[in-house]
Image (tube, rainbow, N blue to C red; front, top):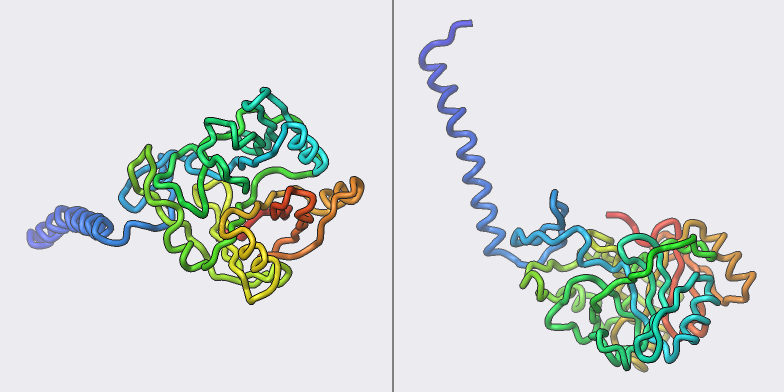
Amino acid sequence: MNRSPSAWLTLLVLLVLLPLLVLIAALRGAAGAEAGPMRGIYRPSEYGWLGPRGCVLPMDVPRFDAIALHAPTPGHAESLATRLGFLVVLRGSGGNWRVSVPMGANGCGLLWRDAQRDPGFEARGVFAPVPLQTLSFTPADPELPLGYGRVTDPAGDPQPNGVTGIAYMIALVRSIGGTAGHWPPAHTLETGGGVPLLDFRSPYRVATLGARACDAPAAGWGGGVRLLEPDGTNGFARERLDRSGAGWLGFGLNTSDVERTAAWFDAHGVRYRRDGVAGRPTLRLDPAETDGWLVEVVGPAGLPTP
């Protein structure tokens, strides 16, 4: 098919100008992102999780794959974990002991240690659960601190109670909106910045805890985050906030089979109550069984997917 010279010229102009216009639009978008809000949820890239300034963070950080816990002695930690149906690994002695529950690859699991005497534990004196990851956030958040580390022991046999990993951290805060608007801290020692806010979704009521809850699903994080705020003047959330203040309150664990986990708890006298939170079947352990922490076992997954 023959084309007139003017048609060929038009086609040539389009072939040259179209890529140029696309490039200009992309550059303008990048400039707009630079000048606009600095915080936003991670988005996946080929090399990692991309922050709003284009700062690429490795795929495995920051994560909530491990949780550090405090115990007065290694025997206390081992007894507590074993009673709840976990396989434990005890290492060290004196102030350097640790009791770990490996739950898979990449350092996942639970880790008990003596927070008063462990020089590597940045959150010394904090007796609530502390999520561990491989970035050092600065400045540290006074209410929801992040620790540095992981479970170094390799995972072995499946857990007798059916638990497969960390589902989410639970934080008790004075105001969901206030915390969701600034957490996590904006900078890390490793990257100098580029740490987006988590994408917290619409709040909902958890009547059994006297609380309103808000979830941030996993998005580059090993586990999600659930914020609780008191809903009214009475109930578990209000009483705990008045007594202990804001901070990490506990955590949720995934199980492959809720009924299997319930049967294990029943057979070993572990007290719990059934609930349904965010559309997931939930076994909430009696805090007397867990040194006062709020621990939930959920299935088939920890938090709703986006």
